Image (cartoon, rainbow, N blue to C red; front, side, top):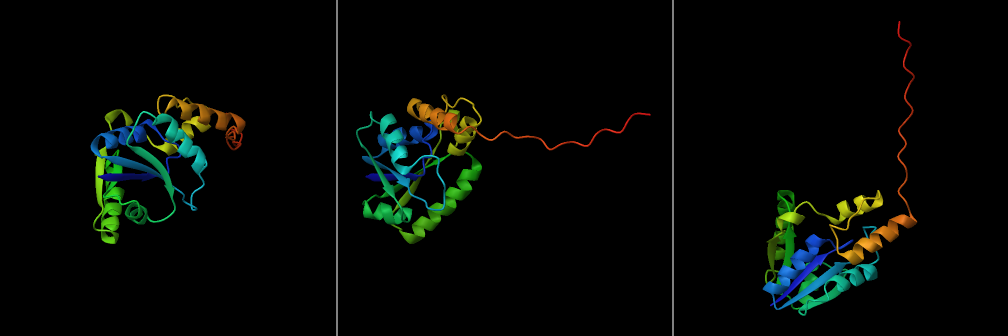
Length: 176
């Protein structure tokens, strides 16, 4: 059985990697499909994201990396996949993912969505959070694969975040 794990992976986190590894144990073949979304401005190019994923998944023998710029179910049908693999972190993820699963099923009833609950240690983790930490000089080494941590650091040491300057405050009136 072929499963597609779609996402932006900007960047891949240890939570994503957890889902990929567990998916590879469950399915004969897993395709990690990096979305090309023209409505988003990613930190890393699609090619950089593919390289990041390739580096940290070399140990998996039933994994393929690809990109797509269509509806997810259109891509999955083209690849003859029977399953869309999705990770769930918190309750708010479930609401959105369930909506997407029902929508995808209405478009392509032969493709099922399988949810994997993220391991506890990654339940708070998102790519957006990782980028924000790195942008402001924090270490993301415990949140992303080593190769990605290095690239994040390189990215943000080239372009440091703008300094937040508080607005001037009115002088205090003299005490009586």
